[in-house]
Length: 71
Image 1 (cartoon, rainbow, N blue to C red):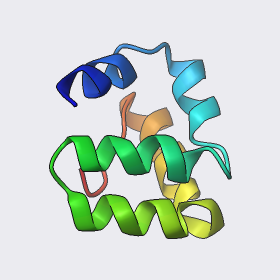
Image 2: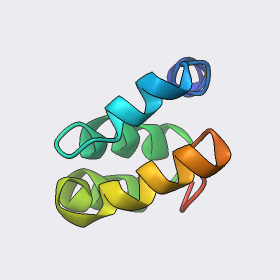
Image 3: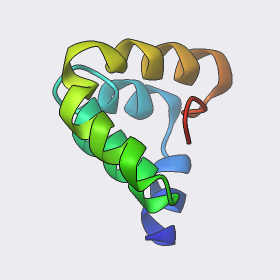
């Protein structure tokens, strides 16, 4: 799973933003959170990420270059 975290962290900014769009965010960043050891948060992100939580990821990616909320 550490390989997945390194892969996502190594992506260019534009690809990180694309992966944070609704529908994709729950899957990619939900698994990202699970890989970082936040299992419950990752599962919640997979379920709720497509509805509202993707906005949080896009904002943190644009401001910080990576997902920083609840990771």
